[in-house]
Every structure is written in structure tokens, then in C-alpha cells.
Image (cartoon, rainbow, N blue to C red):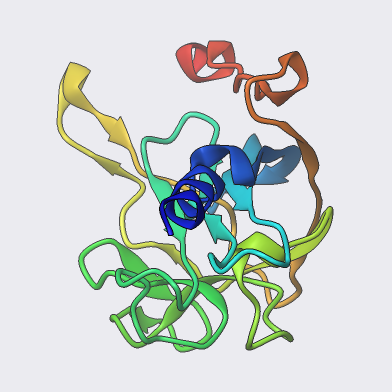
Length: 190
């Protein structure tokens, strides 16, 4: 019995999973029509099929160059996902977002960003190297603050057609896992 417990403990250690970083950077426009880089990233833990633990993932982060607004897109495995839509989604915030198809303040029932919207049962750990990112909201305000304290909250332009994003993945901790930085020099020039 002791051997069985030792084997079980050894198998449940972190060494059973494969850890990966996933990222993409692509050019697009923000809601103001300015050209920007957009970075999409997340991390996964992939367990062997024979193991009892399910694959896990962090939320997918979507960052737009020059903006402080960071979207976190979640799936049903995340208790903070919200119930605005099935699949991989980020719900709206009435203080920050406008639901573009209706032209009204976005609420917690409105999906602002969805990944692979045609796959309602999708989960982040199963996302492949190509995904569709549907943006259905625009920022209610693009800048807040005054003078030197201005903060940019603009993000990727809403579109009725999903953006096609090609994702790279690499073992976590490897040199290839380092994500490209967003060039802030264009922000300083504005």
C-alpha cells in the first residue's frame, strides 16, 4: 500500500504535464482607426491522456499597442468567465464598452470578444495554431484622465468578421517562449 501511495504521489507531481506558452502578434486597427499591433497570449498545462487531471490554461490575454486595456478571455472551466455566451469569451462592462451590433452600453450578457465563435464547446487548452477572434464591442471612451495623466483604453476595432490569428507555441521556459514586445515608440510620438 505504501508503494502505491508513493507512486501516486510521484505521478501527481508537476512533472506529469507539458507546459507551453502560446502567442501571436498581428497588425490591425484600434477603434479610432489607428494602425496598431495586437498581442494574444496564454499558457497551458497538457496532461497525458491516462492521467486523471484535465488540461489547464490561463485566460487568453489580448493587448493592443499603446493601450492599458487588457482583455482576458475565459472558458467554462474558469469561474470568472461570465455567462454572456458559450465557449471562449470575454463579457462586456457597461462602464467601459459599447456593444457594437446594437450601439448600446455592453452589459455582462454581451460577448465582447470570442475565440472560435462557431465552436460553443471550445476550451482554451484545445485551441490550435489558428484561431478566429471575433470582436463585437468598442470602447465607450478611448482616453481617461487629464493632462499628463491621460490613459489610453482603446482596443482592437470591432468587426462582424472574425480576425484570423496564427499562433506560435513553445515549451514554457525555452528561448522560443519569449513573446515579442509591443513597440511603444509609436505611442510616445502621438
